[in-house]
Picture 1 (spheres, rainbow, N blue to C red):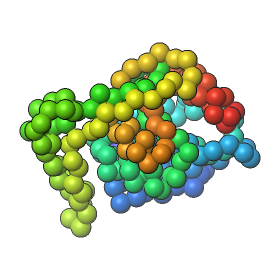
Picture 2: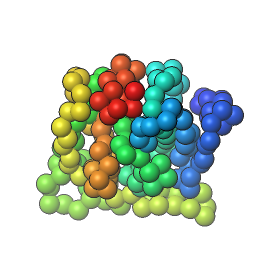
Picture 3: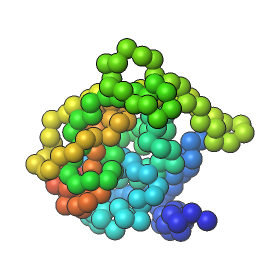
Picture 4: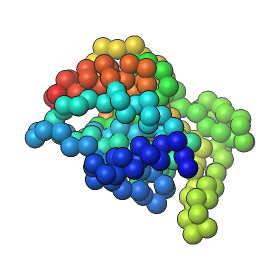
Length: 192
């Protein structure tokens, strides 16, 4: 049994939940009337640390998306479909906001190069079950965004361009101080 299974069970008892074909777990947390839908995308391993830092009062809807992959684009793109958010935050190690990613690609297993390197990125086949696998192109586009609220900054998530390409403002959110930085963002976005 995974260490987060009991938290997922608890969320399933109290909220609407769903597991998609990529193994990502979703929980819809409903706030008061008004406000938008915000996707909080995180690796399943950080749920126990992130959950106590989430706000108790907010407007709109927070969709917790628990990523079972290693920060792959395909599951994140599917999460944007299922959650249909106005904005997305990718919870990462660090403190503050991730406002940019320089772009990188993996040209051979473990060999990462800058985005503008002329070599082709490798394809990774991820087999989740005998009946389901997906191809992950190991090329993560650069992106940059204005700061929505004052905060320390760090390198944003490699999947951020996936959201921006779909017109969904996507930022990184540090696990350290998540509560105060998320609170500031909710105020800016009129979800508080």
